[in-house]
Length: 241
Image (cartoon, rainbow, N blue to C red):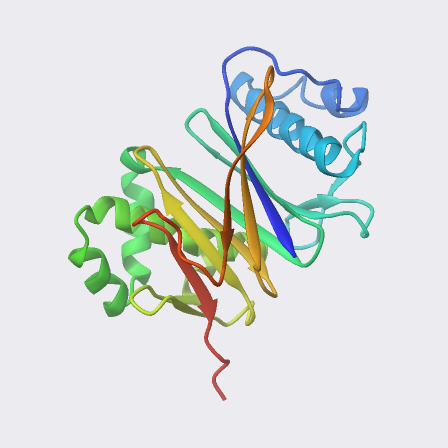
């Protein structure tokens, strides 16, 4: 089973909304300019992915699940997760299981997020962060990994105490989602984490540009190591009895 992870460095221009319904576009008219920009770009990217991968000309209807996660109204359609950081919009999409995604601008994290994260860091996480060449980048990457798992479960920062990461061994333990795998990496600007339950066999990475369309940049497998020295993968520890 493959997940598809696409990134789009957006501009301030209005996105092409040809894949979006008129009702969806009109529902954003009361939004603030920033919220409307992010909302329309993210749905436009999701719509282009659904067309490119599944041949659907119009983005299917999206609803909000009881746990707060956006999802397609038709349960037989793929699961997806959306994320924003700076001018980057990202979507992860899978036809099987559930997904969660988080991206962060490494040098632009707020003190409030950092303070909240520090409250829930385990000694193993602190030791791993301190041992890295760039501790801020390392801490941001762990935050992305944690948030991707929490978003998969429909949890926000209120669920931080439900998850423990063991970065040195690439294992994690969640009291909410007990069978989950994560892939994560960083570049000079962005850290990202993609979570999937029950397993994440393969992650296909794409860049999107309105004129060029999708460019496939990398395939990652849970069984193999990436050429990036900042790539990380996590698998669940067995549940405690």
